[in-house]
Image (cartoon, rainbow, N blue to C red; front, top):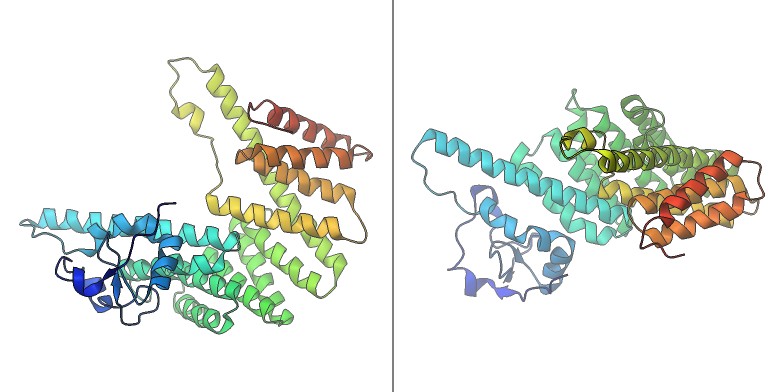
Length: 383
């Protein structure tokens, strides 16, 4: 990662800094993270200011390093354009750049959350909210994802009061938007479930997680990875209540969903490789790439978080279930194979194989053997 650029005094760069766009005038001279009076400016973009070095460093580590150069064309005043067509094109380009920043900041914040780095997620999520507000308006349903990211990040750092505030903002928008998609609604219920679970209110947590599962299942399918998160968090609540039969059943459901998804992903990848190997020079690339379906970085981080958590629970259980543990290990082996972490894929695959050698599940053993051959065929695989 490039070194943090040294902060610059506001006074020393004020003359060199062009006026920001109208949407950011009210933030001029205010800290990007907390809104307090700023003393420092980023010396690279000269458009982002901070109250102290700690906030500059926090923003840089979270997201500013990635978006510093992207802020200049969206925050400076547009040049004078003589025709309506030029002005329309200029506005379209501005919105396109802003939406790109929204996607980048949102995905970065989500990945930090799945990685358990909630404090690092906060600045990125704040940027996602700020740009979403500029593009869509302060009461648009498009702000809901950013509010939910902020809420989950606050839950992760233990600031439940601030998390509740962000969730209230998201809920208010959803309630006044009758056409709000179920995809947004299920994520809202999940965030409320996480808040109540963290606060120890298990009854309310289970209520919201049940709604999360219902809405996700009706939108994406009962066996979708979108629904699996609700099952996982509900299992965690039952686990904390020591209701192990229900918790184990839900953990098994989560494992099955990811196992099926990853199995299909591995099969798809192998089909694509075969097609690429067999296609003639005259075959169009589109025919090969049409069926390619890769996970996003956030989905990869979620899978790693969830499956490793389930594995830890399986391995520490008083009553061991070798078949269930091997299934989680197999899913993790496929996941690490897909993201090219081959040493971990080998490790997980061999553990699953060893567990199943004494079990009657021959079909599962064959599937793991096949995966190990795929892993072993990669030149960088080390066992």
